[in-house]
Amino acid sequence: MRAAGAVLWREGSVAVVHRPRYDDWSLPKGKLDPGETVPAAAVREVREETGFRAVLGRHLRRVSYEVAAGPKVVDYFSAWAASGAFSPNDEVDELRWVPFAEASDLVSRDTDRVVLEDFLAEPADLAHVLLVRHAKAGKRDNWPGDDDLRPLSAAGWRQAAGLRSLLPLWAPSRVHSAPRVRCVDTVRGVADDLGAAVLLEPRLSEEGYWPDREAALVRFLEIADGTGASVVSSQGGVIPDIVSTLADLGGLPLDGTPCKKGSAWLLAFRRPAPGWSTSDSSTGWPRLVAAHYLPTALPTP
Image 1 (tube, rainbow, N blue to C red):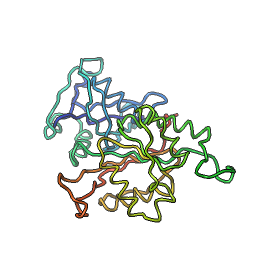
Image 2: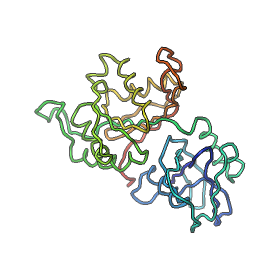
Image 3: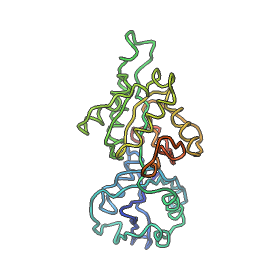
Image 4: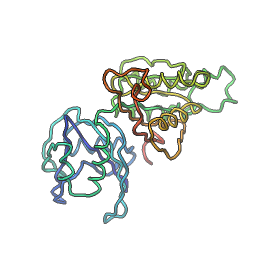
């Protein structure tokens, strides 16, 4: 059984809900609906149980435990309470906003305490980048024209539609892309829904990245340091190096850097201190503190 939930936070406190069916205090969570992605389920369950619209942040952890129906696997995200209000409902009869440091004392399950420990390990208000590999565009050998102009295939357009539904769960404010048609078209729908243009990033294409890798990484960190979350669409020859290099610099262990077409890396950065200087390499740039791979934006079969 797959499920998803969140540590919902605002102004130094997190939401803990009381479920009368179990007579326990819990973080909001619930089972995936048929054909639903894990992040979408987290946002929906938060809305149904708490009444609040959640903007997702970093992935916290996956927990598993046994229930009567068998093993249950739950993915938890950090989530900011953007708007809404609580009303008692069929699943939850009370919600309490509890200071960060006190939430572990209220929840009933040890698994929720572990999730809260992960949440408290970093500041709640991190910067986020969704680093997307362009969707499927057929085989290069079968395209007679300029490879920069190779379009998405029918399967690629389906992946792009999935990303158009998935990526807004993090409320991105800007969309960047390597200047290739297949990269731009993968995220164009997200930009259209924002009423914004796709910002072209030549250094984040394969031909722009490797001749001056350091400058390309600096450009990526400049994007990460912007206001709000960002979407960046790039290529398979670039993304694994960006993720692994920034993870190494941040001391973040990773178990590989997969990069399927139409997939995304959810990257969370701790922002530099106010008054930072680029001359101080230890504190002058955002530091990667969490990286979670989203293998597909398409719904679960």
